[in-house]
Length: 120
View 1: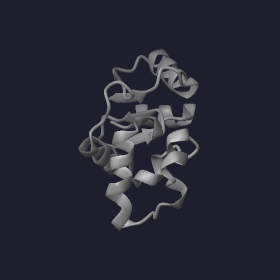
View 2 (view 1 turned 180 degrees about the horizontal axis):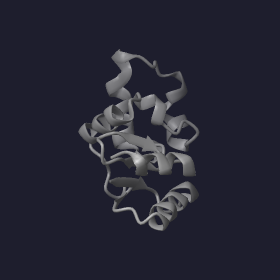
View 3 (view 1 turned 45 degrees about the horizontal axis):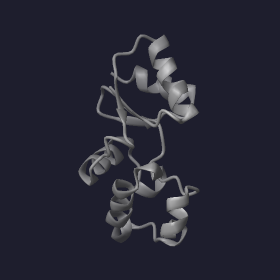
View 4 (view 1 turned 45 degrees about the vertical axis):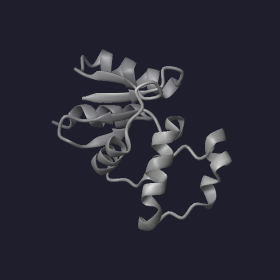
């Protein structure tokens, strides 16, 4: 199990605390420092069952600068979104937990984090 975090994020700190309280075996990836490649972003999207725009923080300054709200959300634009996430990792929703069963969750709630823990 791996959790992608920004240590400055309260949701990330809460998720890590819950994982620790549950005695989970996991690794931490500070994705702003260890930036995921486009391939890794595509892989985590597959594990999440989501599209890149589903995990994009559209209220961030970089999103506004890029004009993301006006970008198409379709198969033809998918790679453009993936590239934007790789080039601007702050846009990636957090925390993302990759579960042991090959799936992943966006762990913004305690229930989502617990869900990731039950996936074997």
